[in-house]
Image (cartoon, rainbow, N blue to C red):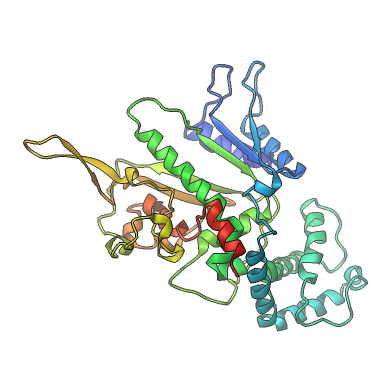
Length: 384
């Protein structure tokens, strides 16, 4: 994690000059927004990232506030008290195990051939009970990442298979069902959308306004996994099959969401398809069904207002769906730029850098069906 912080320093401090070189005593304390869950390992990860980002914090630097929420109100991981989420996840997980029964059977037989594992496995593979993959991976993956000696027969290929099959039996349900993904991580998606709105409005403000330049959230594999499903969801290509590259988020994984501003490059000249669709009849965004939303409900109309002057009249405020076209969003996962399906549309990505750099509205379109308020999540969780 310290290496991650050092890489961030190399990019955002040294190369882009986006962040200050050091946190002097006269720096604004809101340069960074820091957040972690209540778990010690998440807090320690945050400390290591900060240690790499600012390795030499001088005496007199401002104290850094770390935000922590009670576990029952934290949106950085799924709430397993959400009955509908658990019910739907278990149903889909069982179907995925059954659909991939042959692969689970072969994996079980291969593990039985490894002396260091066979003593802990049942001699016969039990159909529909394929939790051996996650159980074994939870033991051998930490050993592997810390260069501890592994039992003979356990290698990168087997660990890769364990990672994939553990994801099939536990994580793939969020890719299959937008409702499951929304109940798992929708409140965090809603919060992140609000952060981006605040950043755009701050950038546009005619007077100086304060806004954290960088937010660091220290979460878990159960944070990253549903977020990957959100950013990978393709409404036009629903599928029951797990992607062959689906894997459990490796240790020390990271995700970066960058808000970019480009006033120089040509703007996309084609309107995305969803801008041409008739608007939903409800004037209340929260009344629009999730699957029909084109942006999260906390994206205000004021973000799309522009001032028009007509001859002989004063300025009037009008709504222009393309008023945000100077802003783009790029999502990185472990230093790999993700290609969000909604941003494939020629009018939804940067004209030079391609689909990995979404227009702001392209990004909003991708996450719209997943962003949920606390109230909306509560209603879904209690639905019969």
